[in-house]
Structures are given as structure tokens and as C-alpha cells.
Length: 299
Image (tube, rainbow, N blue to C red):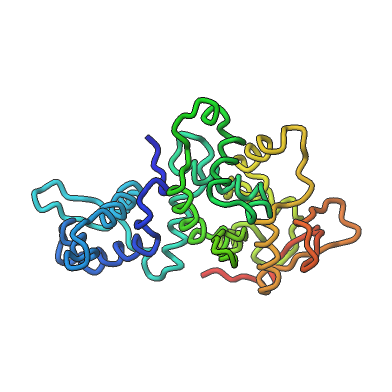
């Protein structure tokens, strides 16, 4: 059965996953047992129930980040600690470990699929409550489950978990409306920013926007042009429909990168190929080329 990070308890947050990794790293020289790690991460004086710690450890096991000795001591060790120097390095490692699924049988495909669906729905997601998101997702992609009243792919708890991990992995930020509803504002800035050295020429030369998008789709099946995004788009809008502009999620990311001076979005009047960003009065809507603002040097 495929591993889905959003199937774990809500208490298994990205911060707690990082905390357990750092704890095991600190204790490596003393060969810590799993029970010791649990008790330090979740002391009995706070809560004797170790469900949260067990869920966090389960995620690490599924990602192959820890190993457990077969002796009676059950010593736990890190498989690799090179990504624990900073929280940003940890985020990058988790992006590499959790994202990229393109087949239903692959780990975290459901996370990728729901993220793509969220991107495809653009601004409409902002007016939907969790129960509406759940219903429309199944109506669009799993109508047979609705018809047969079978167990749903995503429930309310999984949606909350998706929101936690989607924010951490770089697909948007949380926004609280006046009426108390919280939602994820689509903006894949963090997700795209991490990948830029693999997407653009490091010398700052211009790249046609379509080439940039083709490069992006090979890393991000959940974003515009990616395999999962395209499948979801066809299911939601029918196969005959053509995407006229980039999604709000990707457009917001590109605009944020442009405003922050990381990349430059260029609109050349004589360009043969251009793409339209999601319609907005706050940024340019047409792009022909993209480049790094400054030459990037690598170590």
C-alpha cells in the first residue's frame, strides 16, 4: 500500500518531524532507543499517549530516514544527517522525498493529485469550505466513489493535514478570513524558488517562457504542464478545453519571484511565443522570457 503523509495524525507536523530528526542526531553517540526518543519528544509528564511521536516516527520510517537495529535494544539511527543543518535544508529534503509522484500506486500520489486539483481551481478555492473542497474533489476525479458511497480518498482530517504540509512544502500560505475560515492562498513561490538553479541558465541569460515551463513540469507534476496537473485539468474542464492562462498558484509564484528581485519576467513585443499569467491588475499579465536577475555562482 502506498505511503501518504496526509494519512497520518494531524499531530505529525513538519516541525515535529524536524524535531525528532534533530533529537536523534543529538543522541547518536549514545545509541538511543526508540522508547527514549519517544519519551523525550513527548514526555509522560505532558502526555502518556505516544501517538504523536509514533506517527512522526512512522513518517521517518516510510521515507527511509531512520534505521532500527534488530537487537533487543532497538537502537535508532539516522540514515543521513546532511540535510539537518537548517530548517530550509530540511524543507528541500522533504520536497525531494514527498513530491513528484505521477502514478496512483506511488507514494504520496494523493497529495500531488489534490495539490494539482487545488491549483487547477484557481481563485474558486478561496470561497470553498473544507466540506465543499472534499465534495468537489471527489465529484471531479472520483465520481464512482460518490455514486457508490464508498470510502472517500480524502476526508476532513486529511484535508487539514494536506494544508499543513502544503504550506510547509511551498504551495501557499494560510489566510484567515473575518468569518473564521482559514484557507491556503495559492502561491508556489517556495516550491519554485528551490528549483530555479535547475530551471534557468545560471549566467542570467534569457529563457523562453515555454522552455522554462517545460523544465518546471519535469520536476513538478502538480503544477502547470505537469503530468498530474494536465490530467486533473482535463477532468475538471473536459478534454476539449484549453488552458488560456497559467494557474493562480504558479502565476503568484512567478510574480513574487519577480517582485523579490530573484527573476525577471520579460514581455517582448516581437516574441513568437508568450504565456498569459492569471489575470491581475497588480502585475504584468503576459510573459515571453524569464531569467535570473543576477548571475548565479555555484560552489
